[in-house]
Length: 277
Image 1: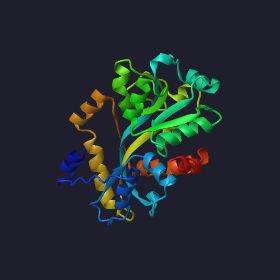
Image 2: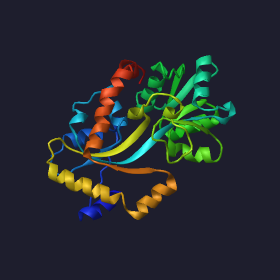
Image 3: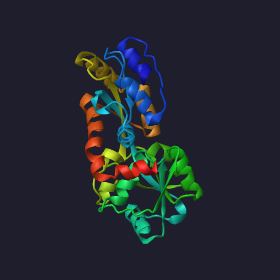
Image 4: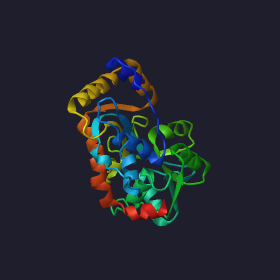
Protein backbone atom coordinates (compact mmCIF):
# COMPACT_ATOMS: atom_id res chain seq x y z
CA UNK A 1 0.00 0.00 0.00
CA UNK A 2 2.85 2.42 0.77
CA UNK A 3 4.12 2.31 -2.86
CA UNK A 4 0.59 3.14 -4.00
CA UNK A 5 0.54 6.11 -1.62
CA UNK A 6 3.87 7.18 -3.09
CA UNK A 7 2.34 7.19 -6.55
CA UNK A 8 -0.51 9.35 -5.29
CA UNK A 9 1.95 11.76 -3.71
CA UNK A 10 4.26 11.76 -6.73
CA UNK A 11 7.30 10.62 -4.76
CA UNK A 12 9.12 7.53 -3.55
CA UNK A 13 8.45 6.73 0.11
CA UNK A 14 11.41 5.20 1.94
CA UNK A 15 10.25 2.45 4.30
CA UNK A 16 12.19 1.81 7.50
CA UNK A 17 11.05 -1.06 9.70
CA UNK A 18 12.16 -0.51 13.30
CA UNK A 19 11.33 -3.57 15.42
CA UNK A 20 11.69 -3.90 19.15
CA UNK A 21 9.95 -3.26 22.47
CA UNK A 22 6.57 -4.41 21.13
CA UNK A 23 6.67 -1.67 18.45
CA UNK A 24 7.45 1.08 20.99
CA UNK A 25 10.98 1.57 19.65
CA UNK A 26 9.77 2.58 16.21
CA UNK A 27 6.89 4.57 17.66
CA UNK A 28 9.36 6.41 19.88
CA UNK A 29 11.49 7.40 16.91
CA UNK A 30 8.36 8.72 15.22
CA UNK A 31 7.34 10.66 18.34
CA UNK A 32 10.76 12.34 18.54
CA UNK A 33 11.14 13.02 14.80
CA UNK A 34 10.97 16.47 13.26
CA UNK A 35 7.37 17.49 12.46
CA UNK A 36 8.34 18.28 8.88
CA UNK A 37 5.34 16.69 7.18
CA UNK A 38 7.55 14.13 5.44
CA UNK A 39 7.89 11.63 8.27
CA UNK A 40 5.02 9.32 9.16
CA UNK A 41 4.65 5.84 10.56
CA UNK A 42 2.16 3.20 11.50
CA UNK A 43 1.13 1.03 14.40
CA UNK A 44 -1.96 -0.90 15.36
CA UNK A 45 -4.08 0.23 18.31
CA UNK A 46 -4.86 -1.14 20.80
CA UNK A 47 -1.71 -3.28 20.60
CA UNK A 48 0.89 -0.50 20.83
CA UNK A 49 -1.09 1.52 23.41
CA UNK A 50 -1.28 -1.62 25.57
CA UNK A 51 2.50 -1.95 25.36
CA UNK A 52 2.83 1.71 26.36
CA UNK A 53 0.54 1.22 29.36
CA UNK A 54 2.31 -1.93 30.54
CA UNK A 55 5.83 -0.56 30.02
CA UNK A 56 5.54 3.24 29.90
CA UNK A 57 8.11 4.77 27.51
CA UNK A 58 9.72 8.21 27.84
CA UNK A 59 7.25 9.73 25.38
CA UNK A 60 3.46 10.03 25.31
CA UNK A 61 2.00 8.06 22.42
CA UNK A 62 -1.19 10.12 22.75
CA UNK A 63 0.64 13.21 21.50
CA UNK A 64 1.11 11.75 18.01
CA UNK A 65 -1.23 13.22 15.41
CA UNK A 66 -3.36 10.92 13.30
CA UNK A 67 -3.09 10.59 9.53
CA UNK A 68 -5.79 7.97 9.20
CA UNK A 69 -6.86 4.36 9.59
CA UNK A 70 -6.63 1.94 6.70
CA UNK A 71 -7.61 -1.53 7.90
CA UNK A 72 -9.38 -3.44 10.64
CA UNK A 73 -8.22 -6.82 11.91
CA UNK A 74 -10.67 -8.55 14.27
CA UNK A 75 -9.66 -10.95 17.00
CA UNK A 76 -11.46 -14.27 17.23
CA UNK A 77 -11.43 -17.16 19.67
CA UNK A 78 -10.67 -20.57 18.19
CA UNK A 79 -10.85 -24.00 19.80
CA UNK A 80 -9.59 -27.50 19.21
CA UNK A 81 -12.36 -29.46 17.41
CA UNK A 82 -12.01 -32.40 19.81
CA UNK A 83 -13.86 -30.37 22.45
CA UNK A 84 -16.86 -29.79 20.15
CA UNK A 85 -17.40 -26.29 21.51
CA UNK A 86 -20.88 -25.08 20.55
CA UNK A 87 -20.45 -21.33 20.65
CA UNK A 88 -19.06 -18.79 23.08
CA UNK A 89 -21.55 -19.47 25.88
CA UNK A 90 -20.57 -23.14 25.82
CA UNK A 91 -16.88 -22.18 25.97
CA UNK A 92 -17.52 -19.92 28.97
CA UNK A 93 -19.44 -22.73 30.68
CA UNK A 94 -16.59 -25.21 30.14
CA UNK A 95 -14.09 -22.85 31.78
CA UNK A 96 -16.45 -22.06 34.66
CA UNK A 97 -16.98 -25.76 35.35
CA UNK A 98 -13.23 -26.43 35.39
CA UNK A 99 -13.36 -28.77 32.40
CA UNK A 100 -11.02 -26.36 30.62
CA UNK A 101 -8.21 -24.53 32.43
CA UNK A 102 -5.64 -23.15 29.96
CA UNK A 103 -6.33 -20.28 27.58
CA UNK A 104 -3.86 -18.79 25.15
CA UNK A 105 -2.87 -16.09 22.70
CA UNK A 106 0.18 -13.98 22.00
CA UNK A 107 2.84 -13.33 24.62
CA UNK A 108 2.07 -12.25 28.17
CA UNK A 109 1.96 -8.50 28.61
CA UNK A 110 0.53 -7.91 25.14
CA UNK A 111 -2.90 -7.14 23.80
CA UNK A 112 -4.12 -10.78 23.72
CA UNK A 113 -3.16 -11.28 27.36
CA UNK A 114 -4.92 -8.05 28.36
CA UNK A 115 -7.98 -9.12 26.35
CA UNK A 116 -7.98 -12.51 28.09
CA UNK A 117 -7.76 -10.82 31.51
CA UNK A 118 -10.63 -8.51 30.63
CA UNK A 119 -12.85 -11.46 29.70
CA UNK A 120 -11.82 -13.31 32.86
CA UNK A 121 -12.37 -10.42 35.29
CA UNK A 122 -15.42 -8.77 33.71
CA UNK A 123 -18.46 -10.10 35.57
CA UNK A 124 -20.56 -10.16 32.41
CA UNK A 125 -18.00 -12.33 30.61
CA UNK A 126 -16.54 -14.42 33.45
CA UNK A 127 -14.38 -16.51 31.11
CA UNK A 128 -12.83 -18.27 34.09
CA UNK A 129 -9.56 -19.62 32.66
CA UNK A 130 -6.97 -20.55 35.27
CA UNK A 131 -3.74 -20.38 33.28
CA UNK A 132 -2.72 -18.15 30.38
CA UNK A 133 -0.17 -19.53 27.91
CA UNK A 134 1.53 -16.95 25.71
CA UNK A 135 3.07 -17.62 22.29
CA UNK A 136 5.19 -15.59 19.87
CA UNK A 137 2.35 -14.64 17.57
CA UNK A 138 -1.15 -15.70 16.57
CA UNK A 139 0.22 -18.39 14.25
CA UNK A 140 1.99 -20.31 17.05
CA UNK A 141 -1.06 -19.90 19.31
CA UNK A 142 -3.27 -21.41 16.62
CA UNK A 143 -0.75 -24.22 16.12
CA UNK A 144 -0.77 -24.97 19.85
CA UNK A 145 -4.55 -25.17 19.72
CA UNK A 146 -4.58 -27.55 16.75
CA UNK A 147 -2.04 -29.82 18.47
CA UNK A 148 -4.04 -29.98 21.69
CA UNK A 149 -1.39 -28.19 23.73
CA UNK A 150 -4.11 -25.70 24.71
CA UNK A 151 -7.86 -26.04 24.20
CA UNK A 152 -8.58 -22.51 22.94
CA UNK A 153 -6.82 -19.32 21.90
CA UNK A 154 -7.24 -15.73 20.83
CA UNK A 155 -6.06 -15.14 17.26
CA UNK A 156 -6.44 -12.62 14.49
CA UNK A 157 -9.00 -13.85 12.01
CA UNK A 158 -6.47 -13.99 9.17
CA UNK A 159 -4.00 -16.09 11.19
CA UNK A 160 -6.73 -18.62 11.96
CA UNK A 161 -8.04 -18.89 8.40
CA UNK A 162 -5.88 -21.73 7.08
CA UNK A 163 -6.36 -24.03 10.07
CA UNK A 164 -10.10 -23.36 10.07
CA UNK A 165 -10.45 -24.11 6.36
CA UNK A 166 -8.97 -27.58 6.73
CA UNK A 167 -10.84 -28.37 9.96
CA UNK A 168 -7.94 -28.26 12.39
CA UNK A 169 -9.62 -25.59 14.53
CA UNK A 170 -13.15 -24.38 15.14
CA UNK A 171 -13.80 -20.62 15.13
CA UNK A 172 -15.93 -19.90 18.22
CA UNK A 173 -16.69 -16.17 18.25
CA UNK A 174 -15.59 -12.80 16.92
CA UNK A 175 -14.42 -10.40 19.62
CA UNK A 176 -15.26 -7.44 17.37
CA UNK A 177 -18.87 -6.32 17.20
CA UNK A 178 -18.26 -5.53 13.52
CA UNK A 179 -17.63 -9.19 12.71
CA UNK A 180 -14.91 -10.65 10.53
CA UNK A 181 -14.44 -10.74 6.77
CA UNK A 182 -12.61 -14.07 7.04
CA UNK A 183 -15.50 -15.75 8.88
CA UNK A 184 -18.56 -13.75 7.78
CA UNK A 185 -21.05 -16.13 9.45
CA UNK A 186 -19.27 -16.19 12.81
CA UNK A 187 -21.30 -14.54 15.60
CA UNK A 188 -19.75 -11.66 17.52
CA UNK A 189 -19.75 -11.54 21.31
CA UNK A 190 -22.30 -8.73 21.10
CA UNK A 191 -24.58 -10.98 19.02
CA UNK A 192 -24.81 -13.45 21.91
CA UNK A 193 -25.45 -10.92 24.66
CA UNK A 194 -22.01 -9.87 25.86
CA UNK A 195 -20.77 -6.26 26.18
CA UNK A 196 -18.99 -4.47 23.35
CA UNK A 197 -15.20 -4.65 23.76
CA UNK A 198 -14.16 -3.25 20.38
CA UNK A 199 -11.50 -1.09 22.05
CA UNK A 200 -9.62 -4.38 22.57
CA UNK A 201 -11.40 -6.83 20.30
CA UNK A 202 -9.91 -5.63 17.02
CA UNK A 203 -6.80 -3.96 15.70
CA UNK A 204 -7.19 -0.66 13.86
CA UNK A 205 -4.23 -0.30 11.53
CA UNK A 206 -3.37 3.39 11.53
CA UNK A 207 -0.81 5.98 10.45
CA UNK A 208 0.54 8.87 12.51
CA UNK A 209 2.92 11.83 12.29
CA UNK A 210 5.07 13.47 14.99
CA UNK A 211 3.48 15.92 17.43
CA UNK A 212 3.18 19.49 16.16
CA UNK A 213 3.09 18.45 12.50
CA UNK A 214 1.07 21.13 10.65
CA UNK A 215 -2.43 20.34 9.42
CA UNK A 216 -1.68 20.90 5.73
CA UNK A 217 0.71 17.94 5.22
CA UNK A 218 -1.58 15.77 7.35
CA UNK A 219 -4.43 16.57 4.98
CA UNK A 220 -2.24 15.73 1.98
CA UNK A 221 -1.23 12.39 3.51
CA UNK A 222 -4.74 11.37 4.55
CA UNK A 223 -6.13 12.16 1.08
CA UNK A 224 -3.40 9.99 -0.47
CA UNK A 225 -4.22 7.21 1.99
CA UNK A 226 -7.93 7.34 1.19
CA UNK A 227 -7.32 7.30 -2.56
CA UNK A 228 -4.80 4.46 -2.28
CA UNK A 229 -7.37 2.24 -0.59
CA UNK A 230 -9.53 2.48 -3.71
CA UNK A 231 -6.82 0.81 -5.80
CA UNK A 232 -8.34 -2.13 -7.71
CA UNK A 233 -5.49 -4.57 -7.03
CA UNK A 234 -5.54 -3.74 -3.33
CA UNK A 235 -9.31 -4.17 -3.18
CA UNK A 236 -9.05 -7.52 -4.98
CA UNK A 237 -6.38 -8.68 -2.52
CA UNK A 238 -8.63 -7.70 0.38
CA UNK A 239 -11.57 -9.59 -1.12
CA UNK A 240 -9.47 -12.69 -1.77
CA UNK A 241 -7.93 -12.79 1.72
CA UNK A 242 -10.75 -11.53 3.92
CA UNK A 243 -8.68 -8.56 5.07
CA UNK A 244 -10.88 -5.55 5.84
CA UNK A 245 -9.59 -2.37 4.20
CA UNK A 246 -11.41 0.54 5.73
CA UNK A 247 -10.48 4.21 5.56
CA UNK A 248 -10.87 6.44 8.60
CA UNK A 249 -9.71 10.02 8.91
CA UNK A 250 -7.13 11.51 11.28
CA UNK A 251 -9.66 11.64 14.12
CA UNK A 252 -10.31 7.89 13.81
CA UNK A 253 -6.60 7.14 14.23
CA UNK A 254 -6.36 9.39 17.28
CA UNK A 255 -9.53 7.99 18.84
CA UNK A 256 -8.20 4.44 18.48
CA UNK A 257 -5.36 5.43 20.82
CA UNK A 258 -7.42 7.54 23.23
CA UNK A 259 -10.16 4.89 23.51
CA UNK A 260 -7.57 2.34 24.59
CA UNK A 261 -6.16 4.63 27.28
CA UNK A 262 -9.63 5.59 28.51
CA UNK A 263 -11.09 2.08 28.73
CA UNK A 264 -8.37 -0.46 29.42
CA UNK A 265 -7.07 0.79 32.82
CA UNK A 266 -10.65 0.72 34.16
CA UNK A 267 -11.20 -2.86 33.01
CA UNK A 268 -7.86 -4.60 33.56
CA UNK A 269 -5.37 -4.70 36.44
CA UNK A 270 -2.29 -3.45 34.58
CA UNK A 271 -0.07 -4.18 37.57
CA UNK A 272 -0.98 -7.85 37.27
CA UNK A 273 -0.07 -7.68 33.58
CA UNK A 274 3.33 -6.12 34.38
CA UNK A 275 4.11 -8.71 37.04
CA UNK A 276 3.27 -11.64 34.77
CA UNK A 277 4.94 -10.31 31.61
